[in-house]
Image 1 (cartoon, rainbow, N blue to C red):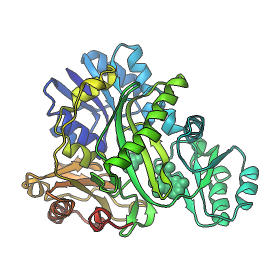
Image 2: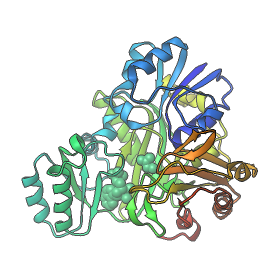
Image 3: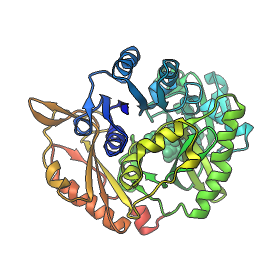
Image 4: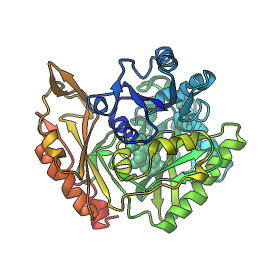
Length: 425
Ligand code: AMP
Ligand code: GLY
Protein backbone atom coordinates (compact mmCIF):
# COMPACT_ATOMS: atom_id res chain seq x y z
CA UNK A 1 0.00 0.00 0.00
CA UNK A 2 1.15 3.56 -0.70
CA UNK A 3 0.98 5.86 2.31
CA UNK A 4 1.10 9.66 2.47
CA UNK A 5 2.21 11.13 5.80
CA UNK A 6 1.59 14.84 6.32
CA UNK A 7 3.87 16.95 8.53
CA UNK A 8 7.54 17.75 9.09
CA UNK A 9 8.34 17.52 12.80
CA UNK A 10 10.03 15.06 15.12
CA UNK A 11 6.72 13.27 15.58
CA UNK A 12 6.43 12.75 11.83
CA UNK A 13 10.00 11.42 11.61
CA UNK A 14 9.14 8.89 14.31
CA UNK A 15 5.92 7.88 12.51
CA UNK A 16 7.75 7.64 9.16
CA UNK A 17 10.57 5.60 10.72
CA UNK A 18 8.09 3.14 12.18
CA UNK A 19 5.84 2.99 9.08
CA UNK A 20 8.89 2.30 6.91
CA UNK A 21 9.22 -1.05 8.72
CA UNK A 22 5.61 -2.08 8.02
CA UNK A 23 5.22 -5.26 5.99
CA UNK A 24 2.40 -4.00 3.77
CA UNK A 25 4.03 -0.68 2.96
CA UNK A 26 4.85 -0.26 -0.70
CA UNK A 27 5.82 3.37 -0.87
CA UNK A 28 5.90 6.06 1.81
CA UNK A 29 5.54 9.71 0.82
CA UNK A 30 6.04 12.47 3.38
CA UNK A 31 4.74 15.98 2.70
CA UNK A 32 6.78 18.03 3.24
CA UNK A 33 8.91 15.91 5.61
CA UNK A 34 12.44 16.75 6.78
CA UNK A 35 15.95 15.32 6.20
CA UNK A 36 15.16 12.54 8.69
CA UNK A 37 11.98 11.41 6.96
CA UNK A 38 13.84 11.46 3.63
CA UNK A 39 15.64 8.33 4.87
CA UNK A 40 12.33 6.54 5.50
CA UNK A 41 10.55 7.32 2.23
CA UNK A 42 10.22 10.04 -0.38
CA UNK A 43 9.76 13.64 0.71
CA UNK A 44 7.25 15.54 -1.40
CA UNK A 45 7.47 19.29 -1.80
CA UNK A 46 3.93 20.11 -0.67
CA UNK A 47 3.29 21.92 2.61
CA UNK A 48 0.90 20.60 5.26
CA UNK A 49 -1.57 23.42 4.54
CA UNK A 50 -1.69 23.00 0.75
CA UNK A 51 -4.80 20.86 0.92
CA UNK A 52 -5.78 20.85 -2.77
CA UNK A 53 -2.25 19.85 -3.78
CA UNK A 54 -2.13 17.09 -1.17
CA UNK A 55 -5.42 15.70 -2.42
CA UNK A 56 -4.33 15.78 -6.05
CA UNK A 57 -1.03 14.10 -5.14
CA UNK A 58 -2.76 11.33 -3.17
CA UNK A 59 -5.09 10.57 -6.08
CA UNK A 60 -2.25 10.63 -8.59
CA UNK A 61 -0.05 8.25 -6.57
CA UNK A 62 -2.92 5.90 -5.68
CA UNK A 63 -2.37 6.46 -1.98
CA UNK A 64 -4.28 3.91 0.14
CA UNK A 65 -3.83 5.64 3.50
CA UNK A 66 -3.19 9.24 4.50
CA UNK A 67 -1.72 9.85 7.96
CA UNK A 68 -2.16 13.40 9.23
CA UNK A 69 0.46 14.33 11.85
CA UNK A 70 -0.34 17.86 13.07
CA UNK A 71 -3.54 19.36 14.53
CA UNK A 72 -4.15 22.23 12.12
CA UNK A 73 -5.09 20.19 9.03
CA UNK A 74 -7.20 17.90 11.23
CA UNK A 75 -9.21 20.76 12.69
CA UNK A 76 -9.58 22.25 9.19
CA UNK A 77 -11.34 19.03 8.14
CA UNK A 78 -8.64 17.63 5.86
CA UNK A 79 -9.71 14.10 6.85
CA UNK A 80 -13.20 14.77 5.47
CA UNK A 81 -11.76 16.04 2.17
CA UNK A 82 -9.75 12.85 1.60
CA UNK A 83 -12.59 10.60 2.73
CA UNK A 84 -14.98 12.33 0.32
CA UNK A 85 -12.49 11.37 -2.39
CA UNK A 86 -12.60 7.75 -1.20
CA UNK A 87 -9.16 7.76 0.45
CA UNK A 88 -8.70 6.31 3.94
CA UNK A 89 -7.32 8.65 6.59
CA UNK A 90 -5.74 8.01 9.95
CA UNK A 91 -7.05 10.97 11.96
CA UNK A 92 -10.41 12.28 13.20
CA UNK A 93 -12.95 14.23 11.14
CA UNK A 94 -12.88 18.02 11.31
CA UNK A 95 -15.82 17.98 13.73
CA UNK A 96 -14.26 15.37 16.03
CA UNK A 97 -10.91 17.23 15.96
CA UNK A 98 -12.65 20.14 17.72
CA UNK A 99 -11.95 18.12 20.87
CA UNK A 100 -8.47 19.66 20.62
CA UNK A 101 -9.13 22.77 18.52
CA UNK A 102 -11.96 24.16 20.66
CA UNK A 103 -11.38 23.84 24.38
CA UNK A 104 -14.93 25.06 25.08
CA UNK A 105 -16.27 22.14 23.03
CA UNK A 106 -13.97 19.76 24.92
CA UNK A 107 -15.18 21.13 28.27
CA UNK A 108 -18.79 20.71 27.14
CA UNK A 109 -18.17 17.05 26.22
CA UNK A 110 -16.48 16.54 29.59
CA UNK A 111 -19.28 18.22 31.52
CA UNK A 112 -22.05 16.32 29.71
CA UNK A 113 -20.32 12.99 30.27
CA UNK A 114 -19.04 13.54 33.85
CA UNK A 115 -15.41 13.27 32.80
CA UNK A 116 -13.12 14.52 35.57
CA UNK A 117 -11.46 17.87 34.74
CA UNK A 118 -10.87 21.24 36.41
CA UNK A 119 -13.96 23.35 37.12
CA UNK A 120 -14.17 26.02 34.44
CA UNK A 121 -16.13 28.84 32.88
CA UNK A 122 -16.00 30.09 29.30
CA UNK A 123 -16.05 33.80 28.41
CA UNK A 124 -16.45 35.64 25.13
CA UNK A 125 -15.93 39.14 26.53
CA UNK A 126 -13.12 40.55 28.65
CA UNK A 127 -15.27 42.54 31.11
CA UNK A 128 -17.12 39.44 32.34
CA UNK A 129 -13.93 37.36 32.45
CA UNK A 130 -12.20 40.09 34.45
CA UNK A 131 -14.92 40.43 37.05
CA UNK A 132 -15.08 36.65 37.52
CA UNK A 133 -11.30 36.30 37.91
CA UNK A 134 -11.22 39.30 40.30
CA UNK A 135 -13.88 37.64 42.46
CA UNK A 136 -11.64 34.66 43.18
CA UNK A 137 -8.74 34.43 45.55
CA UNK A 138 -7.14 31.20 44.32
CA UNK A 139 -4.66 30.66 41.49
CA UNK A 140 -6.39 30.39 38.10
CA UNK A 141 -5.52 28.96 34.70
CA UNK A 142 -6.49 31.06 31.70
CA UNK A 143 -6.67 29.37 28.28
CA UNK A 144 -7.37 30.58 24.77
CA UNK A 145 -10.03 28.20 23.45
CA UNK A 146 -8.48 27.78 19.99
CA UNK A 147 -5.24 26.35 18.65
CA UNK A 148 -2.24 28.41 19.78
CA UNK A 149 0.72 26.12 19.09
CA UNK A 150 0.78 24.94 22.71
CA UNK A 151 1.28 28.52 23.99
CA UNK A 152 -2.32 29.43 24.78
CA UNK A 153 -2.29 28.45 28.45
CA UNK A 154 -1.36 30.72 31.37
CA UNK A 155 -1.02 29.14 34.79
CA UNK A 156 -1.44 32.13 37.11
CA UNK A 157 -0.54 32.26 40.80
CA UNK A 158 -3.06 34.96 41.64
CA UNK A 159 -6.12 36.69 40.12
CA UNK A 160 -4.13 39.82 39.13
CA UNK A 161 -1.90 37.67 36.91
CA UNK A 162 -5.00 35.94 35.54
CA UNK A 163 -6.56 39.26 34.55
CA UNK A 164 -3.37 40.27 32.71
CA UNK A 165 -3.40 36.94 30.84
CA UNK A 166 -7.08 37.33 29.91
CA UNK A 167 -6.41 40.89 28.73
CA UNK A 168 -3.47 39.80 26.57
CA UNK A 169 -5.56 37.09 24.93
CA UNK A 170 -8.87 38.94 24.52
CA UNK A 171 -7.89 42.60 24.16
CA UNK A 172 -4.29 42.23 22.94
CA UNK A 173 -5.41 39.42 20.61
CA UNK A 174 -2.01 37.73 20.89
CA UNK A 175 -3.46 34.49 19.51
CA UNK A 176 -5.82 36.16 17.02
CA UNK A 177 -9.13 34.32 16.50
CA UNK A 178 -7.97 31.45 18.75
CA UNK A 179 -8.37 33.84 21.69
CA UNK A 180 -11.82 35.25 20.95
CA UNK A 181 -13.07 33.09 23.79
CA UNK A 182 -11.19 32.04 26.92
CA UNK A 183 -11.59 29.41 29.57
CA UNK A 184 -10.87 30.25 33.18
CA UNK A 185 -10.31 27.15 35.28
CA UNK A 186 -9.04 26.00 38.65
CA UNK A 187 -5.36 25.21 38.97
CA UNK A 188 -4.72 21.51 39.53
CA UNK A 189 -1.72 20.07 41.35
CA UNK A 190 0.13 16.85 40.59
CA UNK A 191 2.28 15.12 38.02
CA UNK A 192 1.22 15.09 34.40
CA UNK A 193 0.99 12.08 32.12
CA UNK A 194 0.31 11.72 28.41
CA UNK A 195 -2.14 8.92 27.69
CA UNK A 196 -2.49 8.05 24.00
CA UNK A 197 -4.90 5.54 22.55
CA UNK A 198 -5.96 4.27 19.16
CA UNK A 199 -9.71 4.79 18.90
CA UNK A 200 -11.92 3.43 16.10
CA UNK A 201 -15.13 5.03 17.39
CA UNK A 202 -16.05 1.81 19.25
CA UNK A 203 -12.85 0.26 20.52
CA UNK A 204 -10.06 1.86 22.51
CA UNK A 205 -6.50 0.50 22.43
CA UNK A 206 -4.29 2.31 24.92
CA UNK A 207 -0.59 2.78 24.15
CA UNK A 208 2.11 2.73 26.78
CA UNK A 209 2.03 5.81 29.04
CA UNK A 210 4.47 8.69 28.59
CA UNK A 211 5.51 11.89 30.25
CA UNK A 212 6.50 15.14 28.53
CA UNK A 213 8.72 17.97 29.86
CA UNK A 214 7.09 21.21 28.77
CA UNK A 215 9.29 23.80 30.52
CA UNK A 216 12.53 25.00 28.90
CA UNK A 217 14.67 24.73 32.05
CA UNK A 218 15.86 21.95 34.32
CA UNK A 219 13.56 21.32 37.27
CA UNK A 220 10.55 22.39 35.15
CA UNK A 221 11.52 26.07 35.30
CA UNK A 222 11.12 28.84 32.76
CA UNK A 223 8.88 29.27 29.73
CA UNK A 224 6.63 26.60 28.27
CA UNK A 225 7.83 24.96 25.06
CA UNK A 226 6.45 22.42 22.62
CA UNK A 227 8.19 19.77 24.79
CA UNK A 228 11.88 19.35 25.71
CA UNK A 229 11.92 15.60 26.20
CA UNK A 230 9.76 12.62 27.06
CA UNK A 231 9.97 9.11 28.34
CA UNK A 232 7.89 5.96 28.04
CA UNK A 233 6.54 4.28 30.09
CA UNK A 234 5.72 6.67 32.94
CA UNK A 235 6.11 4.51 36.08
CA UNK A 236 3.73 6.78 37.99
CA UNK A 237 0.93 5.42 35.77
CA UNK A 238 0.44 2.02 37.41
CA UNK A 239 -1.79 -0.58 35.75
CA UNK A 240 -4.48 0.29 38.26
CA UNK A 241 -4.25 3.99 37.49
CA UNK A 242 -4.29 3.28 33.74
CA UNK A 243 -7.49 1.24 34.21
CA UNK A 244 -9.01 4.16 36.08
CA UNK A 245 -8.00 6.61 33.31
CA UNK A 246 -9.54 4.34 30.68
CA UNK A 247 -12.72 3.85 32.70
CA UNK A 248 -13.25 7.42 33.89
CA UNK A 249 -11.81 9.38 30.96
CA UNK A 250 -11.31 7.53 27.67
CA UNK A 251 -14.46 5.38 27.63
CA UNK A 252 -16.88 8.23 28.48
CA UNK A 253 -15.11 10.52 26.00
CA UNK A 254 -15.45 8.06 23.14
CA UNK A 255 -19.09 7.31 24.11
CA UNK A 256 -19.82 11.02 24.50
CA UNK A 257 -18.36 11.79 21.07
CA UNK A 258 -20.64 9.15 19.55
CA UNK A 259 -23.70 10.54 21.32
CA UNK A 260 -22.71 14.01 20.16
CA UNK A 261 -22.79 12.85 16.55
CA UNK A 262 -19.02 13.37 16.21
CA UNK A 263 -17.58 9.84 16.39
CA UNK A 264 -13.87 9.74 17.13
CA UNK A 265 -11.34 7.85 15.05
CA UNK A 266 -7.55 8.20 15.24
CA UNK A 267 -5.23 8.88 18.13
CA UNK A 268 -6.94 10.25 21.20
CA UNK A 269 -4.38 11.90 23.46
CA UNK A 270 -5.46 12.86 26.96
CA UNK A 271 -3.14 15.18 28.87
CA UNK A 272 -3.91 14.15 32.43
CA UNK A 273 -3.04 15.67 35.81
CA UNK A 274 -2.65 12.98 38.45
CA UNK A 275 -4.15 14.85 41.39
CA UNK A 276 -4.68 13.54 44.90
CA UNK A 277 -8.36 13.25 44.04
CA UNK A 278 -7.64 11.12 40.98
CA UNK A 279 -6.80 11.77 37.33
CA UNK A 280 -8.21 14.94 35.73
CA UNK A 281 -8.11 15.93 32.07
CA UNK A 282 -5.98 19.00 31.28
CA UNK A 283 -6.56 18.82 27.54
CA UNK A 284 -7.32 16.50 24.69
CA UNK A 285 -5.21 16.32 21.55
CA UNK A 286 -6.44 14.64 18.41
CA UNK A 287 -3.04 13.40 17.20
CA UNK A 288 0.20 11.85 18.37
CA UNK A 289 2.16 13.96 20.88
CA UNK A 290 5.49 15.54 20.11
CA UNK A 291 7.93 14.48 21.60
CA UNK A 292 6.04 11.58 23.28
CA UNK A 293 5.73 9.75 19.95
CA UNK A 294 9.50 9.40 19.67
CA UNK A 295 9.94 7.22 22.81
CA UNK A 296 6.52 5.52 22.41
CA UNK A 297 7.12 4.33 18.84
CA UNK A 298 10.75 3.46 19.68
CA UNK A 299 9.25 0.79 21.93
CA UNK A 300 6.45 -0.43 19.64
CA UNK A 301 7.35 -3.81 18.17
CA UNK A 302 4.10 -4.37 16.25
CA UNK A 303 3.31 -3.13 12.77
CA UNK A 304 2.16 0.51 12.89
CA UNK A 305 0.46 0.46 9.49
CA UNK A 306 -1.62 -2.53 10.55
CA UNK A 307 -2.70 -0.73 13.73
CA UNK A 308 -3.58 2.43 11.79
CA UNK A 309 -5.63 0.48 9.26
CA UNK A 310 -7.43 -1.37 12.06
CA UNK A 311 -8.29 2.05 13.51
CA UNK A 312 -9.71 3.25 10.18
CA UNK A 313 -11.66 0.02 9.64
CA UNK A 314 -13.19 -0.29 13.11
CA UNK A 315 -11.18 -3.44 13.82
CA UNK A 316 -9.07 -2.49 16.81
CA UNK A 317 -10.58 -5.42 18.71
CA UNK A 318 -8.65 -7.72 16.36
CA UNK A 319 -5.12 -6.47 17.02
CA UNK A 320 -2.65 -6.89 19.85
CA UNK A 321 0.29 -4.57 20.22
CA UNK A 322 3.66 -5.86 21.37
CA UNK A 323 6.11 -3.59 23.18
CA UNK A 324 9.83 -3.69 23.79
CA UNK A 325 10.06 -4.15 27.56
CA UNK A 326 12.92 -1.62 27.71
CA UNK A 327 12.01 1.99 28.56
CA UNK A 328 12.85 4.81 26.14
CA UNK A 329 13.98 8.36 26.85
CA UNK A 330 13.97 11.17 24.28
CA UNK A 331 16.04 14.33 24.86
CA UNK A 332 15.21 17.28 22.63
CA UNK A 333 18.18 19.31 21.38
CA UNK A 334 17.01 22.85 20.65
CA UNK A 335 18.43 26.03 19.15
CA UNK A 336 19.81 28.33 21.90
CA UNK A 337 17.20 31.02 22.61
CA UNK A 338 14.16 28.80 21.93
CA UNK A 339 11.23 29.22 22.73
CA UNK A 340 12.02 32.90 22.02
CA UNK A 341 14.18 34.06 19.12
CA UNK A 342 16.97 31.82 17.94
CA UNK A 343 19.41 31.60 15.04
CA UNK A 344 19.19 29.05 12.23
CA UNK A 345 21.56 27.52 9.67
CA UNK A 346 24.00 26.05 12.22
CA UNK A 347 25.74 22.99 10.86
CA UNK A 348 24.87 19.76 12.71
CA UNK A 349 27.49 17.01 13.07
CA UNK A 350 27.79 13.73 14.93
CA UNK A 351 24.42 12.10 14.24
CA UNK A 352 25.96 9.04 12.58
CA UNK A 353 28.36 8.63 15.46
CA UNK A 354 25.45 8.88 17.93
CA UNK A 355 23.42 6.31 16.00
CA UNK A 356 26.33 3.86 15.90
CA UNK A 357 24.79 2.65 19.15
CA UNK A 358 21.92 0.40 18.02
CA UNK A 359 19.82 1.50 20.99
CA UNK A 360 19.85 5.12 19.83
CA UNK A 361 17.68 6.79 17.18
CA UNK A 362 17.99 10.47 16.34
CA UNK A 363 14.70 11.92 15.12
CA UNK A 364 14.88 15.12 13.09
CA UNK A 365 12.54 18.06 13.76
CA UNK A 366 13.91 21.50 12.83
CA UNK A 367 16.62 20.50 10.35
CA UNK A 368 17.22 21.12 6.66
CA UNK A 369 19.88 20.60 4.02
CA UNK A 370 21.68 23.72 2.82
CA UNK A 371 24.63 23.66 0.41
CA UNK A 372 24.84 19.93 0.95
CA UNK A 373 25.13 20.25 4.72
CA UNK A 374 22.66 19.36 7.48
CA UNK A 375 21.80 22.58 9.33
CA UNK A 376 19.35 23.77 11.98
CA UNK A 377 16.05 25.19 10.74
CA UNK A 378 13.79 25.42 13.79
CA UNK A 379 13.53 25.74 17.57
CA UNK A 380 13.38 22.06 18.42
CA UNK A 381 16.07 20.52 16.23
CA UNK A 382 16.48 16.85 17.16
CA UNK A 383 14.90 14.25 19.43
CA UNK A 384 17.69 11.98 20.59
CA UNK A 385 16.12 8.76 21.81
CA UNK A 386 17.72 5.92 23.74
CA UNK A 387 16.48 2.53 24.90
CA UNK A 388 17.87 0.92 28.05
CA UNK A 389 17.17 -1.86 30.53
CA UNK A 390 15.99 0.71 33.05
CA UNK A 391 14.87 4.31 32.66
CA UNK A 392 18.23 5.38 34.10
CA UNK A 393 20.02 3.29 31.43
CA UNK A 394 17.81 4.75 28.69
CA UNK A 395 18.55 8.24 29.97
CA UNK A 396 22.30 7.49 29.94
CA UNK A 397 22.07 6.17 26.36
CA UNK A 398 20.21 9.28 25.21
CA UNK A 399 22.63 11.70 26.88
CA UNK A 400 25.73 9.82 25.66
CA UNK A 401 24.32 10.30 22.16
CA UNK A 402 23.52 13.97 22.80
CA UNK A 403 27.17 14.54 23.77
CA UNK A 404 28.27 13.30 20.35
CA UNK A 405 26.02 15.68 18.41
CA UNK A 406 27.23 19.23 17.90
CA UNK A 407 25.80 22.45 16.58
CA UNK A 408 26.48 26.01 17.65
CA UNK A 409 24.37 27.17 20.63
CA UNK A 410 22.75 23.77 21.07
CA UNK A 411 20.57 23.68 24.17
CA UNK A 412 19.01 20.73 25.99
CA UNK A 413 17.67 19.97 29.43
CA UNK A 414 19.91 17.74 31.53
CA UNK A 415 17.19 16.20 33.71
CA UNK A 416 14.85 14.44 31.29
CA UNK A 417 13.31 11.37 33.01
CA UNK A 418 14.67 12.27 36.47
CA UNK A 419 11.11 12.36 37.83
CA UNK A 420 10.74 8.70 36.90
CA UNK A 421 14.21 7.75 38.12
CA UNK A 422 13.98 9.50 41.47
CA UNK A 423 10.24 8.97 41.87
CA UNK A 424 9.97 12.71 42.53
CA UNK A 425 6.53 14.20 43.04
P1 AMP B 1 -2.85 22.33 27.97
O1 AMP B 1 -2.36 22.82 26.62
O2 AMP B 1 -4.28 22.65 28.27
O3 AMP B 1 -2.43 20.92 28.28
O4 AMP B 1 -1.97 23.16 29.00
C1 AMP B 1 -0.58 23.25 28.89
C2 AMP B 1 0.03 23.02 30.24
O5 AMP B 1 -0.48 23.98 31.17
C3 AMP B 1 -0.28 21.67 30.83
O6 AMP B 1 0.59 20.69 30.38
C4 AMP B 1 -0.13 21.96 32.30
O7 AMP B 1 1.24 21.96 32.66
C5 AMP B 1 -0.64 23.37 32.44
N1 AMP B 1 -2.07 23.37 32.82
C6 AMP B 1 -3.14 23.38 31.99
N2 AMP B 1 -4.30 23.36 32.68
C7 AMP B 1 -3.95 23.34 33.99
C8 AMP B 1 -4.69 23.33 35.21
N3 AMP B 1 -6.01 23.35 35.24
N4 AMP B 1 -3.98 23.30 36.36
C9 AMP B 1 -2.63 23.31 36.36
N5 AMP B 1 -1.87 23.33 35.25
C10 AMP B 1 -2.52 23.35 34.07
N1 GLY C 1 3.81 17.07 23.87
C1 GLY C 1 2.62 17.84 23.89
C2 GLY C 1 1.85 17.81 22.66
O1 GLY C 1 2.18 17.14 21.71
O2 GLY C 1 0.86 18.52 22.60
